[in-house]
Length: 118
Image 1 (cartoon, helix red, strand yellow):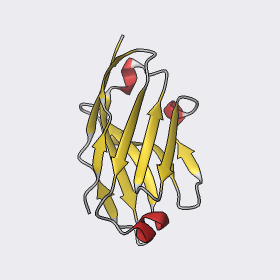
Image 2 (cartoon, rainbow, N blue to C red):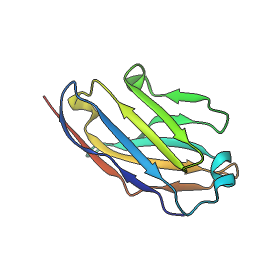
Image 3 (cartoon, rainbow, N blue to C red):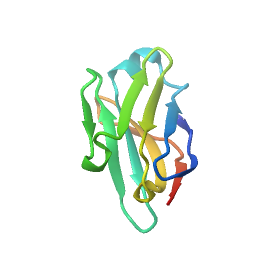
Image 4 (cartoon, rainbow, N blue to C red):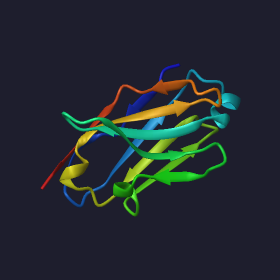
């Protein structure tokens, strides 16, 4: 199953970006059952969870993302989004989308670079 992430780029501090991830190769009914998430990895650091949304629409955010980032999904389109507002230089990282099935099988996107300048 391939995940196709897009929407990264370079912005100045205070700006916004919207990341998208589509999963064309997954059956729609299966996509409905998955937990969708975004992670990020800065150079020299571990990959960290940014936000996730469960199949029942329960959302969880990392502390650094609360109040600035919003995760959403469109099950019919098999897409997951991450709206990022009020970006800071510390948000600079490669962002990865993740899909986890109820059986704990994980699928990862290729990553999209986000660069925030001060």
